[in-house]
Length: 100
Figure 1 (cartoon, rainbow, N blue to C red):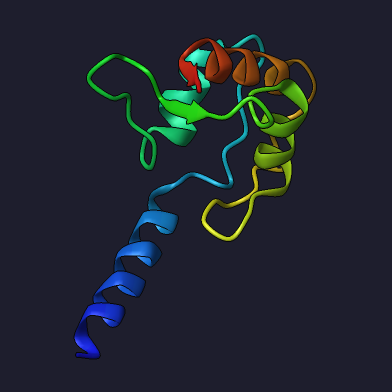
Figure 2: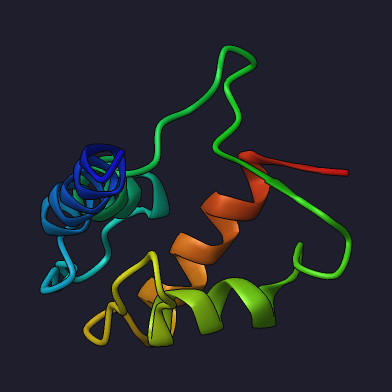
């Protein structure tokens, strides 16, 4: 049936729109605040209080910052999060994730 792929594409589009890709963090804002403002529309904590499950190859600063800066097919890029703000958000994501 062709309806299911259409529903899937519409759901993805709505999810992408709800993420704040134009977000610019205020000065001295916490990683947690940035996450709740820019990311929580698409990413919520699980029942254990963790946001992501990463394998060892992706649970590092370079990978997280690349995802935030450049995005990918499912996630928009956040070009206005940089420097200290990017470091704080990356730290928050890694501290609130599970490595498998």
